[in-house]
Length: 82
Image (cartoon, one colour):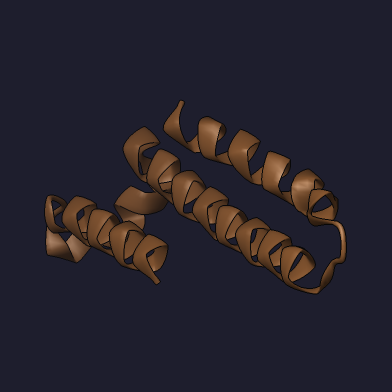
């Protein structure tokens, strides 16, 4: 829930800086908009990986079975930050 809240406030803060009539055009036509869209898509992937790892961790007898989605989550988060 906190991940979604932080992501949503960051996106809203970024969109607030754009002129309201051209937000959709700026998201697809400018480098800033494309990077913002890419980060939102990657964050959705991070959330999906986190849910997958949490599900595997909850039902697995061996907690190490959740290591592959958790490791992928860390790599995608590093990509978002970079």
